[in-house]
Amino acid sequence: MSYRANGEPGSPVPGNLFLSSSQHVFSFCYTYSMFKAIIFDAGGVIIEQGQQLNEFVKIFKPNDKRRFRERIHHFAAALCKGEITEGEYWRKVAESENVDPKTIPPNLWVQGYEETTKIKLCVIKLIKSLRKKYKTILISNTIEPHVLVNKERGLFENFDDVINSNEVHLSKDDPKIFKLALERNQLNARECIFIDDIRKFVEVAESLGIKGIIFENIDQLIKELKNLGIDAPQSN
Image: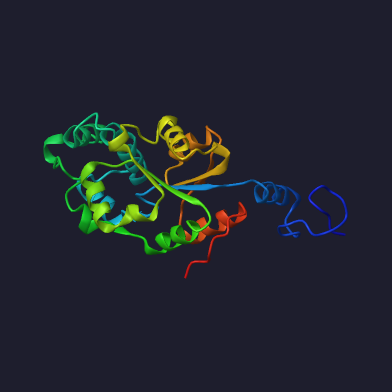
């Protein structure tokens, strides 16, 4: 027998009736929640940075690549808020990796950025589709040279609001940048989804009540959005 949302016999409950009970409850709750905005990270989600990060690995030769990537993002907060220079940033990274800072170029983030990164068109296609029904927001830990490149690429035109860390002097390791996004767009935390490839930043957003998704790839992202009741098109 099928049931209405209030538990009385009647029309089918939205969702896949063949899900396990726990999965069904999860799907049902989010189907009936009212998401109004989807917030995206830039680097790693929309911008492919693999080639650039590989260049860093060649220079630093870390024993643990994952740990090295985590340290890069850890020290980047101060850089992206404009609190330290890029040269000071790389000196911190070098010292943490037991590498002589004098051997590291002081402008690695800027050097070759446009040539070693590219926009993922499949993600842009998804954002354009989502924007028909939801507000789309970009929150990025970034620096001015990267902002200029991505503005020239037309990246920011795909969003209703863009919050670049270097412009607001906040970064994603601080809940304040997410609170700013909510205030500027007159949103409640539970009306938003935040997508990032860095778990730490997703957890910061979730601490406010924002629903977080850790990005792995476009197909995984679309699947998780659909599980939350978001009308997302299939990738191709």
